[in-house]
Image 1 (cartoon, one colour):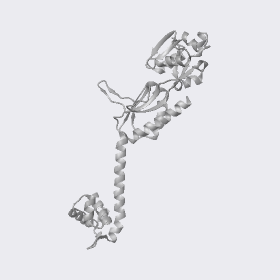
Image 2: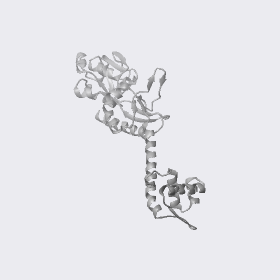
Image 3: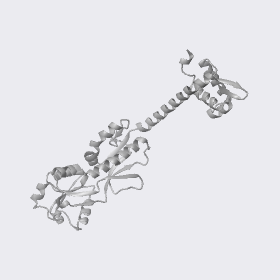
Image 4: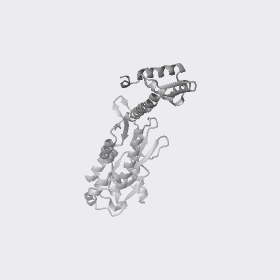
Length: 301
């Protein structure tokens, strides 16, 4: 009946295995960080528990008995399983902390949200929170940020995502109403729909098309690219937008790219990693997935 019960302790199992391998209580004591007397007591307790002797004692040392030889692989398996369980829990603890992801709205609307269910299904153990705003009095610093700007940044890990290729877009009816678009300089008679955080697009466009110093007839500034796109579709003006953000409208014909006018901007959408965040397998998995999905998104756009 004794053999159906659990051993006195995992320490007893570790001591038994050390003695079986080393053939000496003195040597085993050094390995398991116990006194020789404590090692002998652990062996005795295990033998009492099992109701049989596990070692033959002689001047040459200790040698496993037939019972000890039978018991040894089971003790090894038990210790191995407990170590695996401990490692799994440690990995779970590292993965389990929520990852805080902050991003510009258009990246979520036009790219991430429709793709994220695939990631969530593949990695249900990774908890991603999509804002760093907690309350009016508390703001958590994000682990990852998707930002638009002049990357990379020397003080943080940075990965380019997409958005450098920028196109001139407008609704067909708006261009027709203004007499068409025959040359790049015609943009000067248009109303420009501009994102207030991306004012460099106009200078980059005019430089790329030999219009340095040119100004649009009127400029209307917006805070969100999704609003700019809707305004352009509604015929309120022309916009300079990353091609990947307006791919759907260009494909449907809601917007056109007159004369194929575009340019490569010095700015783009980047993923940055907070250097103060605890690095974990979950964070690395998410970063790798975001970068791969961004590569596909830009290629499709």
